[in-house]
Image 1 (cartoon, rainbow, N blue to C red):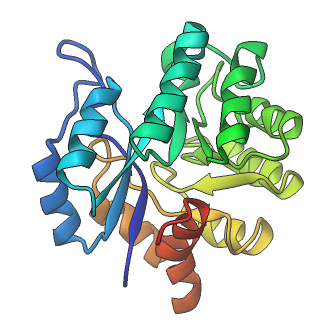
Image 2 (cartoon, rainbow, N blue to C red; image 1 turned 180 degrees about the vertical axis):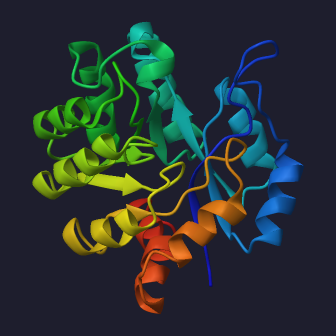
Length: 242
């Protein structure tokens, strides 16, 4: 079954930090081949590393530009540069890492850039106090024209997982990405209640292993055509991939 990974990294931390996880572009491609993943959407800081990897493997890797809203005009300039000049396909925000809440005014210029450029906004979802579903939903309400992906759809907390589904049911511009979310039954629930086109398979490599993330989708209760939506069709449509 064809797959496109909607969310992965090459690096998620720095030496000495608890998040000192990394994978080289070459290792990532080998892992993709092993698990039959056609393309992977990646975000890494600094963004130059993402650009380098995408340049090396343009048919396999898709870049999203990762910015810190606290950097203001610099962050917005980065967005326009990477999307208009380097063919990146979306914007990544990590409220927990950069200490902001999704519905804060500092995020509005980022959201406006997403609207102007017609690209989706990927936002880490599931950790207090910054990255909770309700604040992401308020951003979706304030900017109904942009498509916002709730990365991890609440992550490991049952209340946040349910809230992510509930918020996506309320706001049609919210999408749910599955990596790191442990409740396989919630994937079928999201597909049936949120929408067949708004649930996306992701791995969060290198923090999670593709075999685990794939198996979670396979045992969710979805039939073959529904699995094809989650594994492949939905992210392809969201990013307007050929």
